[in-house]
Length: 615
Image (tube, rainbow, N blue to C red):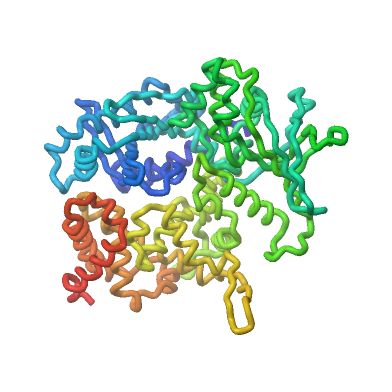
């Protein structure tokens, strides 16, 4: 299947998911943004709002303010479903820049917008925050989220008066597609530097006293022009393990790279200014040069840039813009993995591929300083996550009418895994059969699962911080299933075995998801004004706090539903949650207040009085 066909199939599945959710919500922009957000590198999740004034060309779909570095992120959505079956919907720079300007106008017109916004309006908090903190905001990031393919990938520059740094980040379907394919695992491939590019790399080997160590390490430089050609030929394959690689020349650091390359007198300084790249490979054709410590790298197998995707993409952008890269070099570190087929003398028992995955994940985490790699990306290959994936592929959903089981839940360990799984099957009967077993509404991602778990276990403030923080805490609370640990007893330190999860553990996880869906449906039917996500997290947590002993997770799994008898109670809790969040926040931003443990503790105290008659 050629790449355009794969992109079209992926796009159609993605948009179909959005349309299904949109029919329930009555809008498309918010569900589209919700589907894209897991791909964007952000520890915190933005608050979702909807503000659109066609006459003034102002629009905003979400925002996130990071107080620690005075950075404001604004999210604006361009969503237009495409009806042509054989063509990719293509975005142009002019249209995307106009959407970026819509978000900019929200920022620059905040004072006038605030005049007409009472506290019940979703956008009140962000306009007030902009007005109050305008003198403090140092950086504004505008995220343009488009349902089209921005194939030209040209940078978009904007200036906002009074703001030191303004970055425009385009997240298009091409970028999402590439990340989805990348997360499905490394495909074996060989790069022949000498025979295909006419230039073997020369690097110095780092001394290693181990006779048969797990790695060989080399350091040196790589010509910028060669790196650009390699990226041009191999594209995302080179950065599959750095799944958060910066695929576009954006942001302050990227502009610095780009500007240094543009100025001829500055190019020789590039190697001094830039941190270079870190890479790994599974094997290589490597020759020693004489009796020296220099080696020629002729061929590498499955070469991966695990840190420096931003540098690589920026150099490639310069190359495509005909900037002369002659004489520009990038410092490089290359690690060859020497994991044997049979592993001995290693504390943790695992197969070769699992150890390779763990080593690459750690190299990615420790080496990465320019782009933060999310915990959910790094931990996706743990045995715990793999076991959940296997259980979801093997455990059938019980039926209620004595017929045989026909469907399963689908745990998505890697982002985009479900749609990639569909695209691997032939259109028609194969895809239809797959979707019958794994319906779209039964797909659950690892960060969604973490938020459901954390809310039910009494941490709605953690869920309010977003999927990444929830996933980190979820993994901490379940570390016995994936992380080696030790305890000290009277006889000394003893290593504890990693526990296995069973089908009951998996079924209870799904039951938490079913509870969340039940509460979400009720909250959405109530048409509450604002803070929908926070209200859901706090309602789930309070339901658990009040009725934990009465709600049996295994019964919910068996019935695949929470009894309708809980509906009135959920409505009461949800109303109380919204009122509490607004009133208790005072002058604080409600969304930020909901992320604090004191907010949850206060809700428990307040609910002990207001909801006492329900228990």
